[in-house]
Length: 292
Image 1 (cartoon, one colour):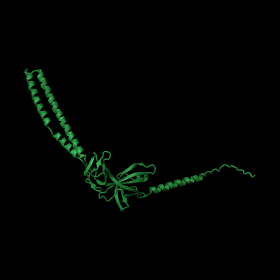
Image 2 (cartoon, one colour; image 1 turned 180 degrees about the vertical axis):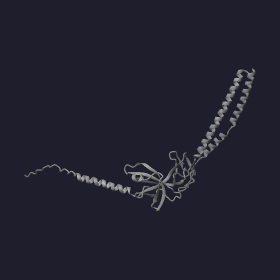
Image 3 (cartoon, rainbow, N blue to C red; image 1 turned 60 degrees about the vertical axis):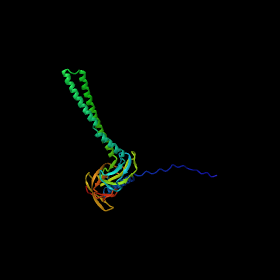
Image 4 (spheres, rainbow, N blue to C red; image 1 turned 90 degrees about the vertical axis):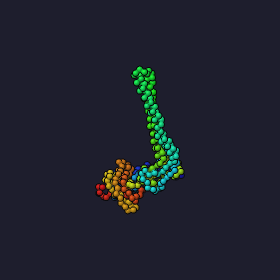
């Protein structure tokens, strides 16, 4: 019989990396990082995209059924232009009632006449009382009736003020049935159509965007944003149509993204003829060594 003897040897331990090699690797990593940072800083152009100066989701302040929609997608609108009208038959009738109540003066005129009558009566009793021809009770009753008549006139005037406020309220409610554009812009999307109901939990009717001016948004490395200041004039290039437009820096974010080291910057670009489109790729240029 043959016996096999197995010998358990300790596992071999990895040899430690020499200090010189570790220093070399660390130096190479630092050198690569420095080269990448230098290349980033010396980059001449950075991509961005244009976006509307303002984008408004036009909503109805009141619920109701849309009866008129006098605009279409792609149509240019001006601030104050009517975009949509809701049903308003009941509100028109309520406004007419409120207007009639506001203009009604019969009760107030009657109470004013009654007040003058009570005032004359009180004066007569006062003269008679002074001459001893009227009792004190009669004089006091005449004065009390005069005060009541004056209070009734005051109450009627307060009622007229309330009616005037009710008329204004009804007029505002009717005016709110007509939705107007808050800005000069372009209708880019219709969310409702004629005959549809606008609910309080879904009041959106359409989207209007202002494209003059446009805004170019960029994410720039920190060293480049240090070369920019607010209201600085810069040139923005559009590679698609090979155009260049002047711009003005309107926003430099005070926050640097911790992961990328980028800073958000916005540039405002005049677009009076509408040739520049929103969502278009654009470039901002930094000349090497230029302190723009």
